[in-house]
Length: 368
Image 1: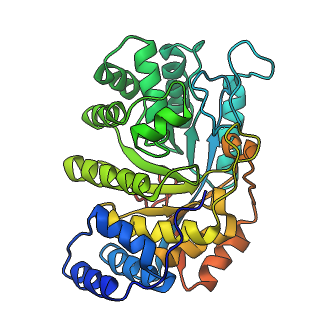
Image 2: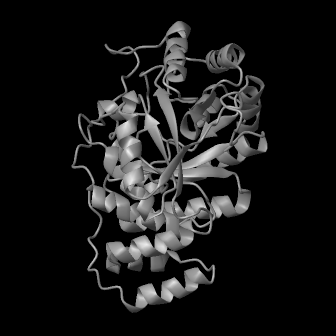
């Protein structure tokens, strides 16, 4: 769903915000909405570049080769924007064996990647011990040759609830199992209005941030995410950005921010995809607004080669994914022609550098 096309007549607003951003000041929610509705693409690019330059040299960018391992598709959340889940007891549900998970990790390493993410929804048949045993086995088998995002915040909330543990207790259990990262996945749009519209069982915004605070308090790392293109308004998008900026101000614990687009195919919600131009404009708005998160990531998974244009709209980092069944089921396509994608980034004037995340992956390691 497109959000209010701008009239491209920003004029004095852009001049005023340019001066304030140059002085290191922030924009407000009202200014963000006005900027969205009135600024042209070139103006948004220029403002985003101004904030990006606080953290990165103009031509610098980084990338990862990674995969999302969807170890189960059994889920009770019933989000209407998901084409992946199968309710318990219904045909088509699966659970990967440990050997199948290891095979996927081995393939990732063979392709030069060193980061895996795990995503499986809310499966009521899997106890907390299943996850702790799996992650402990991965850490024991691979050591520091690869890193993994163990869960999303949404899954973490469900597992703590299901196990009748406090958030702090659950986070400590995962840390003891060798987990270092629980990502900000499951955020979608962080307003309670959005969450009540689209899921029969998704936690509140307050719950979401309480879980992230517990994750950080346990010494784990986390990220921020956002998905656009459902039926959200520009005000809801900006509320999400405002809540994220406030959380980062309070904790400083958000390592990166990734925004991608909703894929509507085979979902109950349906609809049409957001155009790439709107995604790029939104990415610029994210960079301008989230001035306290140095790493802003653009989504090759949902935007393919066009995502790399996002490097000119404020992003500085991207994935080269090899798998994500959740998004692929809803219409995402994946290319393993990494050379072509990297060449496109270079053609745009950027110098992509591989960002190693596993401490055993290379002599020069960036812990992110």
